Length: 139
Image 1 (cartoon, rainbow, N blue to C red):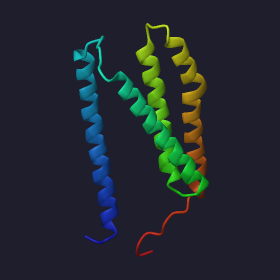
Image 2 (image 1 turned 45 degrees about the vertical axis):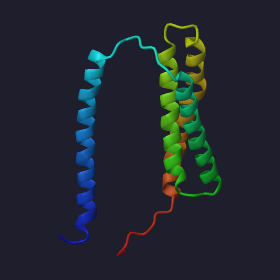
Image 3 (image 1 turned 135 degrees about the vertical axis):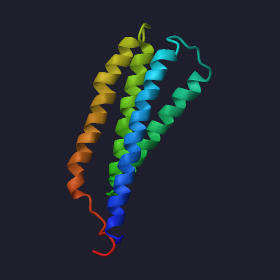
Image 4 (image 1 turned 120 degrees about the vertical axis):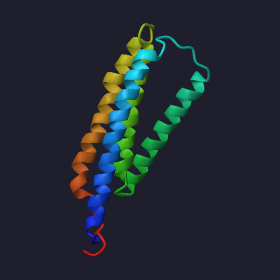
């Protein structure tokens, strides 16, 4: 097996693992849908949300910092920030259903969180051709 076969083998193994995980997650999601209670009282609600928002701040700040430095890792942090914004919108809205907070959650999701995520994803897509690629060893 040559050194040029190794990247293709790693790629194939990664895709096989991702496929297996996706199938497993579908099964897990069905199990959760059938077994989780629709109402659940939690402890540490404040810790959960403050922790999530702190993670979102760290992702945004990292994206801003790397963007100002014109570092190519900004692509990774921007996509992570976009994913966190989408998760934030989902949880804010889905957990507020049936409460008076649904309106503010929906407005923030529609006018702030989802558009910001879409903007970041669009910018990453636009930046990809400009990100300098490191030459592969042996080339």
